[in-house]
Length: 93
Image (cartoon, rainbow, N blue to C red; front, side):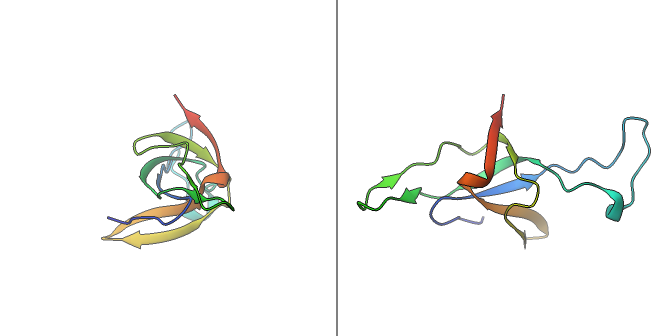
């Protein structure tokens, strides 16, 4: 599995392929997903004094993130999104 560095988080973005009415959208007409599940977290952000501040999310958390945040990567045939912790907006309960 991917192991992020620093304050980065690996997400599995959730794709919604159908509208409320059940119409399947073409891939170019879809909005970029803004929710995902955390699959891996880095050790934390290194502060100026050398201490490491742990991240505020953990594996399994469902989160909201900025629409154009992060880098898309493919690993073992699955697509993931790697973002910095500050690109996360909220944890969904």
